[in-house]
Length: 319
Image (cartoon, rainbow, N blue to C red; front, side, top):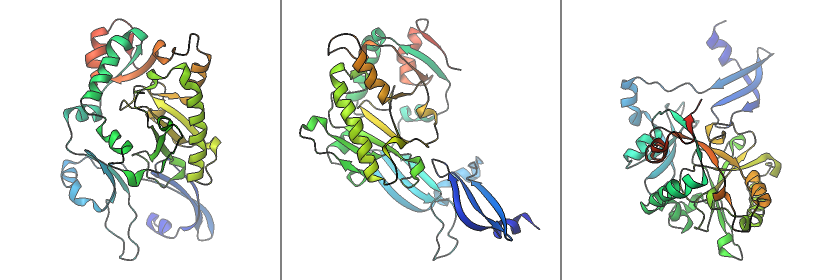
């Protein structure tokens, strides 16, 4: 019996498992009445220049999921339809940055990493001014577009209505989530207040607000996605974050722990709240007073502008 014959004779019964991005699925069924499991995953992209030079023309049935400033994202097919009445489901999630800059090229190019320790002094003298520079260059325009209701409103899952407007937040799907695989659920909570650039701006007096926000986010996420209980969610923030406006990542516990959830990138929200509540000092003491360690790419501005010149303090290569 040929391999092709075996697969075509597979009779599907149910889905046993699926990974967070829908790239791997395990099906239970039968072949000739005997039990069988079919494990399927998407193959690697062809890196042949001939294929890649035609990539844009090969993509068909592109569905626009949204756009904001220079960022656009789509669902698309890389294969032709099987039939007119049963079209092939989208197998590509595409993010487009246009027009892109040299900073985007460096960010997305392969680069070696370093593991650095940011002391309160390094933060105050070097990193904080870098953050301010980034904000003044307009890198947060796309975030403010969302908060101000200018763009991506069709993607806003929920906009809170708090008695104090500064306590408000918006819930959106993360750009890398396909918006349908529940086990890969990944949401972003953008806070309305603009005085918080990162976890570094959190103070002891923010702990009650953060704790209440966590409770509210868990409840709202469960309401939006029935079957996802509150104890099936993880909350974390990034440091360094991709952009300097405080936001919280909310993910399903079954989401594959990729590099964005790893040590050196993600900090658990519950840990931050507990640290603030037990921290010594007055109400203005906060995360600006602690050391934070994280990875940076050797092509990143932080490494080139800050840590490479400071090498020899508390900088060592990542393993």
